Length: 240
Image 1 (cartoon, one colour):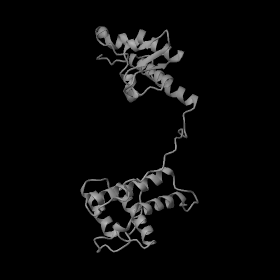
Image 2 (cartoon, helix red, strand yellow):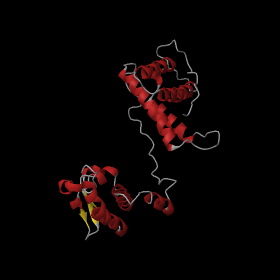
Image 3 (cartoon, helix red, strand yellow):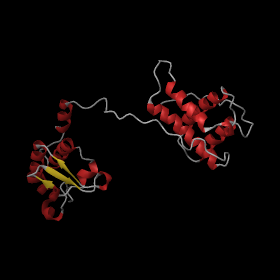
Image 4 (cartoon, helix red, strand yellow):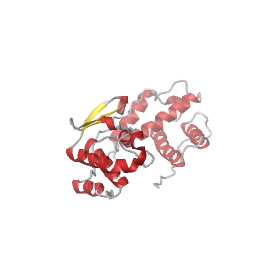
């Protein structure tokens, strides 16, 4: 588990209006409301550094923190450079700001503040990027070949994997497929109530269709036994 330094909270803990005192209260509230210890530690680290940033600007009380000041702190995070010279990631910036937003929302709920200066704070937009380590074609083939197709359950597994690889369907979508959803002539499969509660047709490759046909002809009847006519689902267990 990653460890974080336990920085001292700057300021006067005896002053009930000070950021220092209010952070101590907030951390105690998190602990007594069963927040994870790691969450409390990270909040302490991030908010302590925010308080230090405020003290450098002669701001020590929660009532002195304004929306404009929080916006300047957000710019500070954007331009901040770590020891290795790299900027904070968008994700890291968002985590810092989420901690701040949660703290000031709590201060408002506790009636410490009349107004929440972080109410309209907007988080930076996350980058939409592809995974760094996508599987190679040979790695995918190795995974597909793991299923033991000498057994009905293994043949079913191979058909499921081939369908997932060909179509990009979600797990629950595959589990919810009916026999009648498969259209061989058009080489598509109907997904009912998928993402966004919408129906959609998804194209299938010839290879996935071939494995589905093999599963339907050789494995599904054996899995169902005498109960074959009882289940309308495409993929079944031995209990139907």
